[in-house]
Length: 131
Image 1 (tube, rainbow, N blue to C red):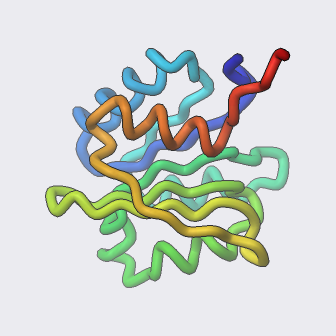
Image 2 (image 1 turned 180 degrees about the vertical axis):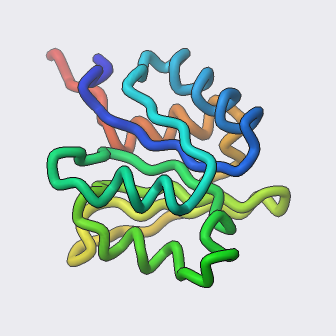
Image 3 (image 1 turned 180 degrees about the horizontal axis):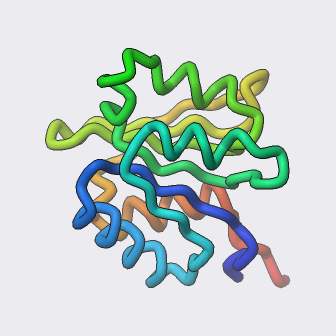
């Protein structure tokens, strides 16, 4: 069963990409999604201790104009539990799971394929065994 309380932050400069990924997550029954288009918005939304995000899905070059190492920012950001990075159009993706002290990394395929997000969400929000 889907944890409907999970908070997800989507970050990509292109509005169409945000809507597309949000719709894929909606099909997986995740609805607490905040789409943003700039790194400044990511910083603003993740700087409040009352606003913990369970997952940040972010295009990896979003912070390049600010000369910020986005991977390092996310590893040290206490209000982001998990981060899914992707680069477009190269199709290289990485996942940082857990706290900065105990992060695991992995690679997934294209986020535009709903199966990728399904795999990602099964890692972040594993199904509960009802047996």
